[in-house]
Image (cartoon, rainbow, N blue to C red; front, side, top):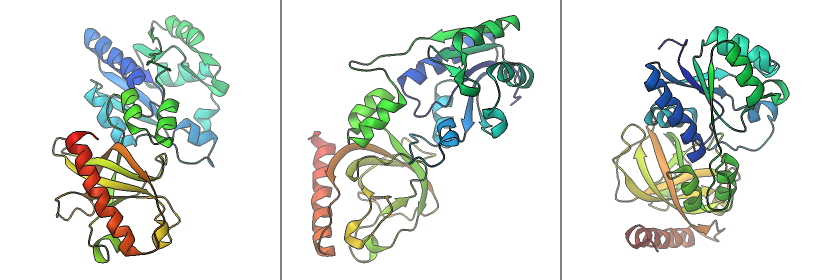
Length: 302
């Protein structure tokens, strides 16, 4: 698709929570009214990663998930702009002129009320809209959306996941938080010694939620409606002297070979924290109990 022209929403949009969705849906609606494409301009890496390269992983979604989610909301194209030193050092005026006007020829900008960009975030909504107006580009502001207790935000979602509250995080997101990735080989302990097959995904830049066992729903990324129930452990596997936080899921009543396939695991419910067992037999016994409890939860919600 032509990178030039259209209604743009700009931001990191990490998580695509309900606040983001309001901005994105508005951009799509205005674009439809104007008969032009609706586009998202986002950044890679996330601007927070660029300015703080040593911070722990914090991402809520991958770029692949972001593209899928924004297109479901009516966006025609996700543009991932490499966030380089040159972009980071641009003044807001240069960014408006060189990127928004000259490079992308935007016809309309939709953004949240706390939107800001440019070096030191000096380009607030007021000055940006005034500058765009000089170039016959309109701006639409979307007020922040509040939940019962706080503003919908990516920060709030991260806090809830760290606390082990995926149901509350789902309320802000408007869907279950999910981990997406390619199925890779693990240590082989689950299949060979515990006789419980697991699907392993590298967590990469994902935030590490509260470590422990979760109820999950799994599906191939390309076929989201064909879901399978299961449990997942997000942790260090202390029983087998693990050190890195890993994700491994056991999919119920499933015996297909899925290595190298792209899957998504929806995190539904936190069951228990990770435990360091004295033997593999104790670990197996607990996993079997976890499976029974997860099945009860999925059937009765308790």
